[in-house]
Amino acid sequence: MNIQGLTKRYQGRTVVDGVSFSIPKGKVTSLIGPNGAGKSTVMSMISRLIAQDEGLVELDGTHIGHWKSRELARRLAILTQSNNIQMKLTVRELVAFGRFPYSGSRITAEDAEIIDRAIAYMELEEFQDRFLDELSGGQRQRALIAMVIAQDTEYILLDEPTNNLDIYHATNLMKTVRRLCDELGKTVILVLHEINYAAFYSDYICAFKDGGIAKFGPVHEVITKENLSAIYGVEFEVQTVKGRPLSIYY
Image (cartoon, rainbow, N blue to C red):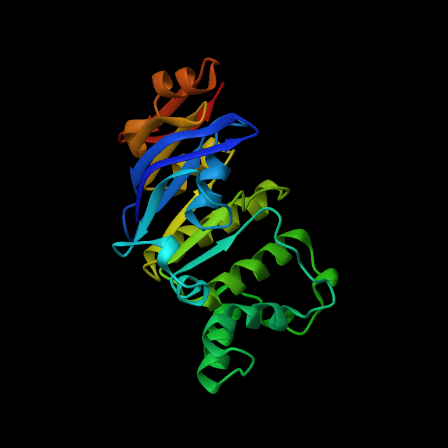
């Protein structure tokens, strides 16, 4: 996926300014940066949830604006912070929504098998017939990830997936994100506020500041004391093991 010159303006104010970078296939790339830096806006433009004012996003060599909605849904799945969960759905019913770009209104035997695998992958078998309002926050988030997995796309976009989760559930979710890449070969793009999660579970980091890219590259090149201090405007400390960031604090 190639992003070229993405720009977005709201009410005369430029919130994303000429952003360009390429997302490596089969890797985990995290977008980080201070609040208001533009990372979630870029994520929304990549997924075509909002239109850019300038620039383009190429997917498989084609501008995403040229893909029909159903064709795009076969290649790219997104889970946003504002995903509306219908609490009177069961887990299985929610996950089944992931197959609709393929099956329309009829779930085939192949679809059912994919749904079963997604539920099993997220270890939700014992909860699949429960309503979503009977689950914990962590379990509901796992159900949403299962829905995304059932869509069976190459690209998975997750905007703040650890938001409102405690450390235990957030860590387990990030381990799952890593498995999506390592075991299933997915290309995962994340927006994260928690730098430690980004550093430990990602392959690449795209750090934003003031609507532009401050630094992009492999984790060990971006997550340094000097870079983070410059991006966030506070003094950071970064502990590394064999050249890879292990603990980050300020």
